[in-house]
Image 1 (tube, one colour):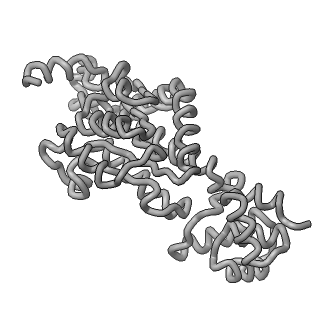
Image 2 (tube, one colour; image 1 turned 135 degrees about the vertical axis):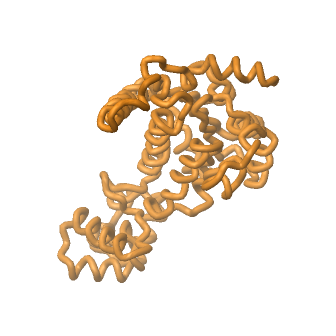
Image 3 (cartoon, helix red, strand yellow; image 1 turned 180 degrees about the horizontal axis):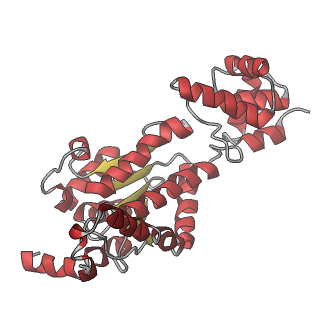
Length: 307
């Protein structure tokens, strides 16, 4: 693609559109700019809402594969890639997932999290290499993330993953995107032109973050990682999370502090096991067995617990 072709393509994208009515924004008082920016952001949830059926369909497909041992892989460049890495990195402490279960790939590798890696986003071949290193299977899911929907790294990742038989999702902020066309599930959240022309870390980035929150969180709900709205698979890796673990067990069972500490001790600090032990009146090993037999779903384990 020539430089002229690229300029023409970018000019056609909603996310790159210029808004002449904002051309004097740099001369406005700070409070007025803040009000404008805040007003722009209020339209993002509605744009996401328009895609909820597509989002839900993608989540069900992802959860089905992850229940069979598949992985969730995000692939993107720049802001989109960083958001994928962020979402993936938050799954282990929140849902006690293995770090290899939800993976974030960013064009240019870890260095690109904090600095620009020139040319990385333009390489579909780099995306293929990054995915091949993961040894994808048909049980895995690859979510390409790109505000423009044309980023070669994201499109290349989805195309390669689909060729390998993996589930594919394309998350973009322009309609009729190349990324959406390459994926089985296209999620195109059109938030409109940015306050600062082409700065897709703004509304587009917010929209992507909201959708990624849904993809990972609701998938984990489907996988039994919560009990109601409680994070029963939380990993107590610091003092705050240990206190949160105690509170979650309390909310789920109504047990007193002594009973909770005893249950957490007997179950090695596993919140879900401790809740089952208290609610079903079983010991730690029995709770572990019941949960294993129930695929980690606490409600199912409770239903099969001895009365």
